[in-house]
Image 1 (spheres, one colour):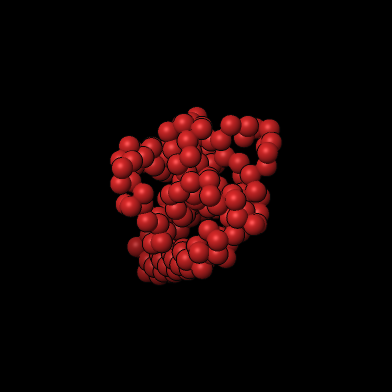
Image 2 (tube, rainbow, N blue to C red):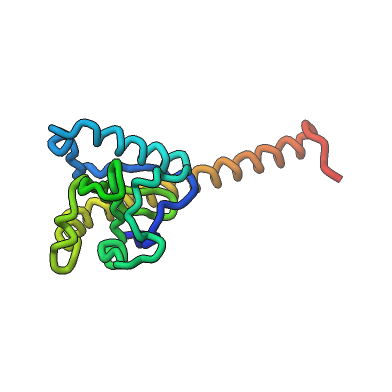
Amino acid sequence: MDEALKLSRVQGKPLDVIVSPLYKANSYYRGKPHLQQHVLDIVDAIAGGEALPQWAYRSGIDSDDPPDRLLSRYGIMHLHLGSKTSNDLLFLMQFDDHVVILAIGNHKHFAEDPPGKLLYEFHRAKVAEINTLRDTQKLEAEAAAALKASLELESKKSAIKRGFLPRKR
């Protein structure tokens, strides 16, 4: 699996946002429909490369005191929904050019030993599958682009030989 970035903040560039097939938010939104808009605000900011709302990051993020043990151990970032003190969290993993939204939940994952182990184990294989598929698609796109460029070059060479295009001097 591609190594998740362990940055305390989301990168300031547009990233693809992939929602894991294991992400089940509908039951969490029951009784808390306002949370859906907070999630959408975060997703829109990430996709657009914009700064996330200040309420999304935990208090003390710049001092890293206490350290975020889910992030440092597994690369799982948690973002608060609506306020820095909210117990409603969005969990995601950040990679160089994309993020994978894992789950919506609360701070219970910090009480595990080690913190976040169950969340990580539940999502690990699916995130690896997502990253492998993305890597395969990138390689296929690069190979197709290289083939197209090669064919265009051969076509130009053939046209030059037949006298249809002027030779560069």
